[in-house]
Length: 296
Image (cartoon, rainbow, N blue to C red; front, side, top):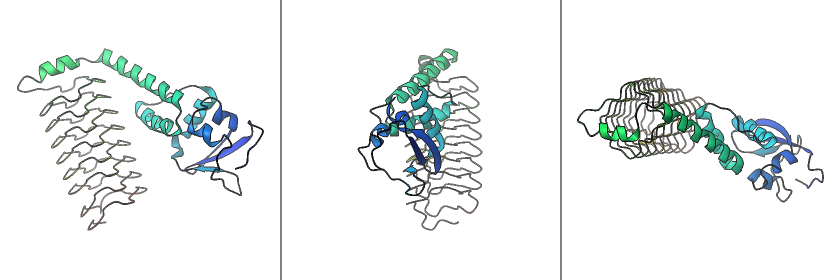
């Protein structure tokens, strides 16, 4: 791409197949230290369509309109909680520090507001789990930090667990039947033999979580991050994992009857000898997945 002395000249962008039109000013002025500003500074050669002039970027274009609107107006978009994580990922890729700070500020404010409405505190939970049998059925625990606690065998059925922080917690044999855990963080948590029947974990973070022998029947993990999760022998019958990230996940022996994995990322996942005959895989990414002996 040649240098253009007119910084307000139009730029056509192709972001993963979605087309956008903007100006060099928009891409460079608000966030001058960003990757986009560097790309369009004139110092770099760009991948440009010689016929139509589109500059191609190999990213998901679904949220790029929010990126452009931030660069135009400096206003953080108003989104559902689960979408902020997706936009944050794009902002981090493009190195838009102002947008990153803005999203974190909104998420922190939401967490503070949720904690004000929460029925129990972390201290209350710690006191409760010292008893023999613990139930939090139907309780609102939204936004609590329950990381690194031993919550094995605790019954959370029907509870509101939105944005709860369960990172590295021991939740062995815990019950999550019909919970609303949208946006919850189960990063590296132990969830072996847990029951998630009918649970909503849309947009939840379960990267590295151990879900061996867990029951996930009729649950929703749409857009959830299950990167490198352990799902050996888990029952995902009728579960909805549309758009979920299962890159590097181990699904050895998992039950995937009528499981929705449309548009899911299953790159490098372990699916050896798994029965995929009744699994919905339209648009799923299977590059590098181990499908040896899988029934399709």
